[in-house]
Length: 202
Image (tube, rainbow, N blue to C red; front, side):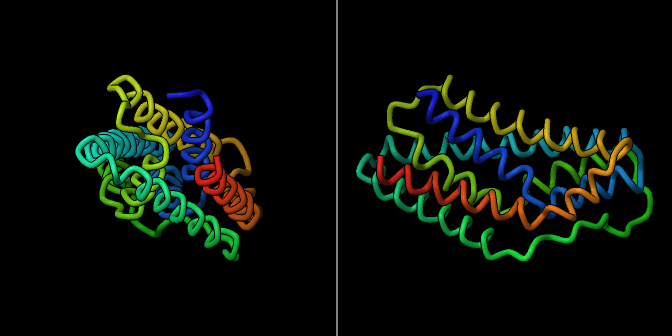
């Protein structure tokens, strides 16, 4: 894997992590209704779910391309088109209102369960990873590259939500995210479209 390909994947994983949505609401819930430790546990569990999903997705795409090499171009274009579509949706978004879900206090086991399942049972995340990896995973992709991709997705996701859980205890992170969610969506949309175009033009 080239550094430029890894950088594109890392950028997309970062944008996917910081984009406001159900995962962020879940981390907020456990941090606010529980404690900083609850949020940290949920963040780690969410990252594990993302890492497993990423590894399964990259392995599946690589296996499919190995068995049917002619699909590589089609998957590349389809993945780029989906990333561009996500970018368009983000550009049209009016911004997300982030509020912790109104549930009773939870224990550590529930925090870990919710963190993992929010990531692992999301069909949108599955589609996102397949679209993300299709343009960058070739038939000659080795196991080390697959592991690097999965670790990248895991590390970025875990790191971001750890920052969220820790930041809620000391700063105005939530109000900042609420105030700037529209701009986060706009920037995400522009970068996604730019990467999609670079995939099909380069």
